[in-house]
Image 1 (cartoon, helix red, strand yellow):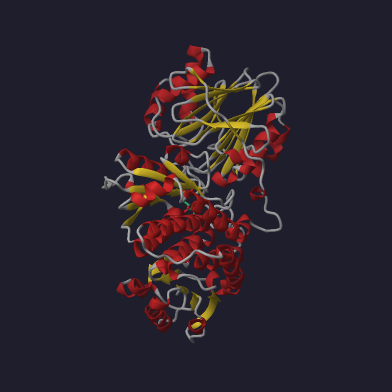
Image 2: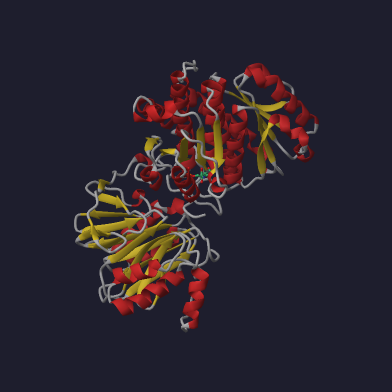
Length: 590
Ligand code: M6R
């Protein structure tokens, strides 16, 4: 949520900031802005409603030190007045996070006669810093005094007039600082400033950093200089370019085979080491996650319980963190998160750890907050995912989680189907799934869309439904096929297409009963299945014939046509599948 950047160095700051912001735009895209300290020491500030592209006029700003922001609104509508940077007197700031005591602090500022020019929570921080700067004369001390008064989450980058320095502070929102040759950077994510020779450090909660042309100084919570190990920033990869594709979402679906295969191999390697010890001794598995990652957890539950007979609970992290959860002794908690920065998942993972669980992080980002919190990490190898809708990262999570299940089953002396030819299976599912483009006209005018399945199919159905809602804005639900008749069938008619998933022969007749029931009520029915004879049923208006795969692992292939369906429907409806309204990729606030 929100991307922030900072730059100081020999180059003009504005183009560097704009470039960094456009790489962070997946974090929010309702308004954007930059502030640069010019040669005479004064700020130039440009803010715009809309996307980073709207800031083009700021590219020419002169000055070597600046900060920038791309916003996902929390407090205050998306507008120019609420766009960052926020300025008060001689201080300017960008913020990612939520200041929970902003209202009471603002009241105190108003009582002092200070005037506010936005509806944001962030603006109060710039007021406090400006006041303390007058008293302290030093920006770092002023920021430290201000942050001591704040509750909630923040990653700040702060500038003041007359100085070529940026001060950064972090609590529960990600912030990296990096040093290059005669220049220094700050960003919410390493993707902002890829480049050979640059070295970065992810600030920990309560730490501060000062960026100057001489490099980066890190300070602990008591403002003592702290020596920290910096890691090399990766060079720019192909993930950040659309290549021949029109949208990142479609490109990332094309990358599913590679993401799944690489993640499977990584997990297999790990499953023979430290992780194996933890995993194989566990009596209970708990999984905490949000959104798509929660669905991959549900898929793991089906496999872990049926193949390894390990009781597995999957929790929505946003519920778990406030639910006083029972954490069984000797259990393992797996926190699943593509970004490793989702606020709810981090809080749930922290709670599980506090309550004595071993914590395994499954994430796509090596230096993320989640990987730093976990006892043991397993990294998916999906490459950077830019479209807001998770596609290849879901497949990568599934592949890794299924590899763990196989290892777990073996450790318990139980057999498990082999996970073979994963890349080829996914490629075949993409080939078959492209046929969903022809289904789009039946969906574009739909009142609601249902995705039905049982067992593993139900988990894939939930994910298919989330994908379609997210990128097309069509209402819909993923539903247990047998449950429809207990109430929800009342919604079904000619205007509600139904997508049924049937990947397990043992459950096929049962799910087909639901197909008959919705067909009888007029619903257009679409089928995703490896069973050709089912696809030929008279009730079926359209079908995708999947490659054969062990039913327990079938979401690896069955979800792919659903991702493609969501993509094609979104495009047919004129939506931007890469940047759906109201959303951001990395949900770093509650
Ligand atoms: O980075 P995470 O995996 O923790 O993100 C969790 C969810 O916000 C994410 O999966 C979200 O549901 C996707 N954008 C859905 O496509």
